[in-house]
Amino acid sequence: MGYSVGEVAKLSGVTVRTLHHYDDIGLLAPSERSDAGYRGYDDADLARLQRILFYRELGLALSEIAVVLDDPDVDELEHLRRQRDQLADRIGRLEEMVAAITRTMEARRMGISLNPEEMFEVFGDEDPTQHADEAEEHWGDTDAWRQSQRRTSSYTKDDWLVIKQEQADIERGLAETLTDGAPPTSERAMDLAERHRRSIDRWFYDLPHEAHRHLADMYVTDPRFRDRYDAIAPGLAEYVHDAVHANADRHDAGRSTP
Image 1 (cartoon, rainbow, N blue to C red):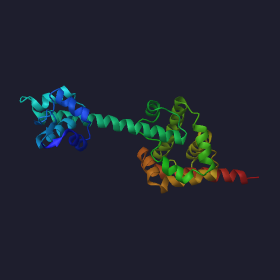
Image 2: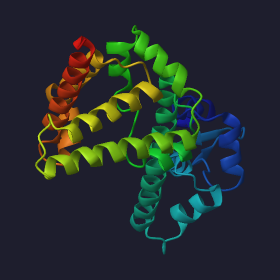
Image 3: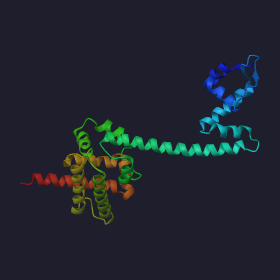
């Protein structure tokens, strides 16, 4: 008699009760029945069951599946195209949700206590957690990292908006100073470099001038920092680096002056 209902259940992963239900509603009637009333399924029945399970996985109701399989006027290929498009949209939304949750998790790890909507309001398309693992690997054991996490964990959306605006003003000022032709050793450039240092020192971690030098070195050695600054104005990364070093030299000279 081909396959028994128990064998089909084992092969397909559905329950015997489900197969009985499919039979009762006419969705999958076995091709054979024994004299004792036992159901028998052939290869064609198994192929139909495979299609039923496929459509069920797509989210179709059993009544819709019956129409797709049995109505000769239904274009199954067109129906599959629509289901594929719907699934692609759903996958896209799910991927966006996963990405938002992942950014939130990384933000919590970095001490940023904002929800996904607030993260977007503050940072837009920029992802402040993009290099979270790398940052923690390099600085996770430092006092600066721990201090930054302690401070930022209490910041609200408004705090982050203030920080973002403050940093944008400083970067714009440095870009304008560069464009105007003022050298990085000028008072104007060094004052902006000092504002840059104090902003980080205020909001994130203690940043003495010598540490500011090391941070500025990364602006020219790390392509990501360089690209970010140079996207604001060509040559800005090198200019900020030189202005920071000039400002640190000015500070050191002031300390040594009797």
